[in-house]
Amino acid sequence: MDLRLRHQPTQPYLALPVVCPWDAVAIATSVGAAFADLARRLASAGITPEGPPVAIYHRMDSGQFRATCARPVSEEDAEAAPDGLQVGVLPGGEVARMLHVGAYDRLPETHHALDTALRAEGREPGQPVWEVYLDDPARVPADRLRTEVVRPVGAAPATHTKNAT
Image (cartoon, rainbow, N blue to C red; front, side):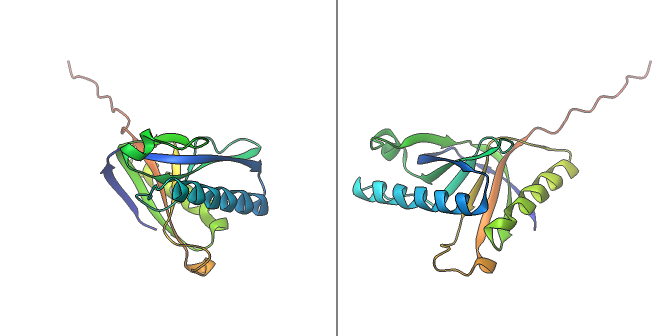
Protein backbone atom coordinates (compact mmCIF):
# COMPACT_ATOMS: atom_id res chain seq x y z
CA MET A 1 0.00 0.00 0.00
CA ASP A 2 1.50 3.25 -1.14
CA LEU A 3 0.67 6.60 0.36
CA ARG A 4 -0.14 9.26 -2.23
CA LEU A 5 -0.46 12.94 -1.39
CA ARG A 6 -2.23 15.31 -3.74
CA HIS A 7 -4.24 18.50 -3.86
CA GLN A 8 -7.93 18.17 -4.63
CA PRO A 9 -10.73 20.68 -5.14
CA THR A 10 -13.82 20.65 -2.95
CA GLN A 11 -16.48 18.22 -4.17
CA PRO A 12 -20.20 18.64 -3.48
CA TYR A 13 -22.21 15.51 -2.74
CA LEU A 14 -25.72 14.29 -2.00
CA ALA A 15 -26.07 11.71 0.73
CA LEU A 16 -28.02 9.61 3.20
CA PRO A 17 -26.89 9.00 6.79
CA VAL A 18 -26.36 5.51 8.21
CA VAL A 19 -26.48 4.66 11.92
CA CYS A 20 -26.42 1.02 12.98
CA PRO A 21 -24.79 -1.34 15.47
CA TRP A 22 -21.03 -1.80 15.11
CA ASP A 23 -21.45 -5.24 13.55
CA ALA A 24 -20.11 -6.36 10.17
CA VAL A 25 -23.44 -7.76 8.95
CA ALA A 26 -25.42 -4.72 10.14
CA ILE A 27 -22.91 -2.34 8.54
CA ALA A 28 -22.88 -4.17 5.20
CA THR A 29 -26.67 -4.35 5.13
CA SER A 30 -27.21 -0.72 6.18
CA VAL A 31 -24.59 0.75 3.86
CA GLY A 32 -25.75 -1.35 0.92
CA ALA A 33 -29.37 -0.30 1.48
CA ALA A 34 -28.39 3.38 1.82
CA PHE A 35 -26.40 3.36 -1.43
CA ALA A 36 -29.24 1.57 -3.27
CA ASP A 37 -31.80 4.07 -1.92
CA LEU A 38 -29.51 6.97 -2.82
CA ALA A 39 -29.07 5.65 -6.37
CA ARG A 40 -32.86 5.34 -6.80
CA ARG A 41 -33.45 8.87 -5.50
CA LEU A 42 -30.78 10.39 -7.73
CA ALA A 43 -32.06 8.54 -10.79
CA SER A 44 -35.65 9.61 -10.15
CA ALA A 45 -34.46 13.23 -9.88
CA GLY A 46 -32.48 12.92 -13.12
CA ILE A 47 -29.15 13.43 -11.33
CA THR A 48 -26.07 11.67 -12.68
CA PRO A 49 -23.34 11.21 -10.05
CA GLU A 50 -19.91 12.62 -10.89
CA GLY A 51 -17.99 9.78 -9.28
CA PRO A 52 -18.17 6.47 -7.46
CA PRO A 53 -19.92 5.94 -4.10
CA VAL A 54 -18.25 7.45 -1.04
CA ALA A 55 -18.72 6.64 2.66
CA ILE A 56 -17.70 9.50 4.95
CA TYR A 57 -16.76 8.90 8.58
CA HIS A 58 -16.74 11.94 10.82
CA ARG A 59 -16.07 9.98 14.02
CA MET A 60 -15.00 6.37 14.25
CA ASP A 61 -14.81 6.02 18.03
CA SER A 62 -18.44 5.65 19.12
CA GLY A 63 -20.25 2.46 20.06
CA GLN A 64 -22.40 2.82 16.93
CA PHE A 65 -21.37 2.82 13.32
CA ARG A 66 -22.08 6.25 11.83
CA ALA A 67 -21.42 7.16 8.23
CA THR A 68 -22.67 9.32 5.41
CA CYS A 69 -23.27 7.38 2.18
CA ALA A 70 -22.70 9.89 -0.62
CA ARG A 71 -22.34 10.38 -4.33
CA PRO A 72 -20.36 13.29 -5.77
CA VAL A 73 -22.53 15.62 -7.85
CA SER A 74 -22.25 18.94 -9.65
CA GLU A 75 -22.77 22.18 -7.73
CA GLU A 76 -26.01 22.71 -9.66
CA ASP A 77 -27.36 19.30 -8.64
CA ALA A 78 -26.31 19.89 -5.02
CA GLU A 79 -28.20 23.20 -5.00
CA ALA A 80 -31.34 21.48 -6.35
CA ALA A 81 -31.12 18.53 -3.94
CA PRO A 82 -34.23 16.38 -3.77
CA ASP A 83 -36.09 16.36 -0.44
CA GLY A 84 -34.68 13.92 2.08
CA LEU A 85 -31.08 14.01 0.85
CA GLN A 86 -28.25 15.63 2.74
CA VAL A 87 -26.04 18.10 0.90
CA GLY A 88 -22.37 18.26 1.78
CA VAL A 89 -18.91 19.01 0.46
CA LEU A 90 -15.80 16.86 0.61
CA PRO A 91 -13.00 19.17 1.71
CA GLY A 92 -10.49 20.50 -0.73
CA GLY A 93 -6.79 20.90 -0.15
CA GLU A 94 -4.06 18.38 0.43
CA VAL A 95 -5.32 14.84 0.94
CA ALA A 96 -3.64 11.51 1.54
CA ARG A 97 -4.84 8.49 -0.41
CA MET A 98 -4.10 4.81 -0.01
CA LEU A 99 -5.55 2.05 -2.19
CA HIS A 100 -7.02 -0.99 -0.45
CA VAL A 101 -7.47 -4.17 -2.48
CA GLY A 102 -9.58 -6.84 -0.85
CA ALA A 103 -12.62 -7.39 1.30
CA TYR A 104 -14.23 -4.50 3.13
CA ASP A 105 -13.70 -6.15 6.53
CA ARG A 106 -9.95 -5.58 6.09
CA LEU A 107 -10.33 -1.81 5.49
CA PRO A 108 -9.34 -0.91 9.09
CA GLU A 109 -5.84 -2.18 8.26
CA THR A 110 -5.57 0.32 5.40
CA HIS A 111 -6.90 3.15 7.57
CA HIS A 112 -4.21 2.33 10.13
CA ALA A 113 -1.50 2.06 7.45
CA LEU A 114 -2.46 5.45 6.00
CA ASP A 115 -2.34 7.14 9.43
CA THR A 116 0.98 5.46 10.25
CA ALA A 117 2.53 6.49 6.91
CA LEU A 118 1.39 10.10 7.36
CA ARG A 119 2.81 10.33 10.87
CA ALA A 120 6.07 8.76 9.68
CA GLU A 121 6.34 11.76 7.32
CA GLY A 122 5.68 14.16 10.20
CA ARG A 123 2.13 14.91 9.03
CA GLU A 124 -1.15 14.76 10.94
CA PRO A 125 -4.21 12.91 9.63
CA GLY A 126 -7.16 15.28 9.37
CA GLN A 127 -10.91 14.76 9.46
CA PRO A 128 -13.17 13.52 8.00
CA VAL A 129 -11.91 10.28 6.54
CA TRP A 130 -13.72 8.73 3.59
CA GLU A 131 -13.68 5.61 1.46
CA VAL A 132 -14.21 5.69 -2.30
CA TYR A 133 -15.64 2.40 -3.62
CA LEU A 134 -14.08 1.91 -7.04
CA ASP A 135 -15.72 -1.47 -7.76
CA ASP A 136 -19.24 -2.85 -7.48
CA PRO A 137 -19.25 -5.70 -4.91
CA ALA A 138 -22.06 -7.36 -6.88
CA ARG A 139 -19.70 -7.72 -9.87
CA VAL A 140 -16.18 -8.00 -8.40
CA PRO A 141 -15.01 -10.78 -6.07
CA ALA A 142 -14.35 -9.58 -2.51
CA ASP A 143 -10.62 -10.31 -2.71
CA ARG A 144 -10.29 -7.95 -5.73
CA LEU A 145 -12.45 -5.03 -4.59
CA ARG A 146 -10.61 -1.71 -4.82
CA THR A 147 -11.37 0.96 -2.24
CA GLU A 148 -9.48 4.22 -1.85
CA VAL A 149 -9.08 5.47 1.74
CA VAL A 150 -8.78 9.27 1.77
CA ARG A 151 -8.30 11.92 4.44
CA PRO A 152 -7.20 15.53 4.62
CA VAL A 153 -3.63 16.15 5.69
CA GLY A 154 -2.81 18.50 8.52
CA ALA A 155 0.20 20.73 8.36
CA ALA A 156 3.54 19.34 9.32
CA PRO A 157 4.30 20.22 12.93
CA ALA A 158 6.43 23.32 13.38
CA THR A 159 9.99 22.74 14.44
CA HIS A 160 11.63 25.13 16.85
CA THR A 161 15.29 25.94 16.94
CA LYS A 162 17.14 28.00 19.45
CA ASN A 163 18.81 31.13 18.24
CA ALA A 164 22.51 31.21 18.98
CA THR A 165 23.49 34.22 21.05
